[in-house]
Amino acid sequence: TGQHTRVEDFRATGERLRNWGRWGAEDERGTANLITPQALVAAAGLVRKGAVFDLGIPFDRDGPQPGTHRINPIHLMSETGDQQLFPGGFRYADDYIFMPLQCASQWDSLAHVYYDDQMYNGFPARDVSVKGAARCAIDKQAKGIAGRGVLLDVAALHGVDWLPAGTVITPDDLDEAARRQGGVGVGPGDILLFRTGWRRKFLTERDPAAFMAGEPGLGQDCCAWLRERDVAAVCSDNWAIEVLPGENPDVFLNVHMILLRDMGVPLGEMLDFEELAADCAHDGVWDFLFVAPPLKISRAVASPINPLAIK
Ligand code: UVW
Image (cartoon, rainbow, N blue to C red):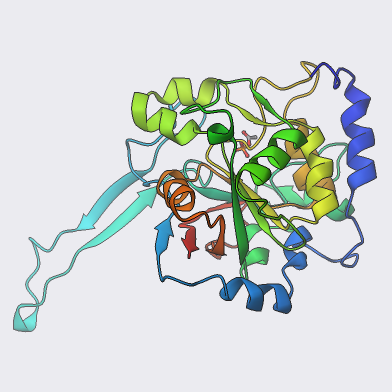
């Protein structure tokens, strides 16, 4: 947009939208606190036809990591039963997985990103060390993240299979997508899922380097849009939520810094909305119960997820 050309602009926006102290000085859950018991009861009422949509991408060697700084999961068998002889004929199989926690469908915890030596809620960045995250680790979100999910299909709004890398998604795009989808509302405690088509690009091309080279995604102005609506979490089918290359060449991952560090919004990355989007376009219902608990990995910065949308 040309608007975000100054480094201090992201700091000023972050300060204006900051949620520090809102849920207490010790809070490590951020906007997940916005999913109230009432919101959860209402979200459960969105289950009407018993249809389950699996929004996770496979954890295997054919994933979208090019292997430069993150690899795809390596799955190893430690027992296959062939050397075993237990009384009564019992045999078993065991396995291991070796993978970055950031390699496929995942939640970013609030410990994932910091600047000026502080993370969410003003906790010192040094609380994340080689020992892991002493604050804001992903297991702090163990009771979530479940609530009302709303899918906004921005690729469909623009009539494309996928938006090109570098496409800035604006607040107008989100509003227009909602209008096009029958005026579906996004409000307090909701989990926003926005579709860019980036998963479809990967399924079509099977090119990890192209998937990771850049992406369409949220521009910085969307942070205020999310704050005004008090959205509890944001998920996308791209790998970093935000547009890359970014709007401001002097700042890397400004939307990450504002959403995770200032606003305390958990980010769900690399989901697959293809089947869900087709169903929503078919029945005209764009909201659902969304259930995506992280694994309780102590002191971890992220967690793999198998997110479900249930209609
Ligand atoms: C970084 O690349 C730092 O973050 P993410 O995995 O959240 O996109």
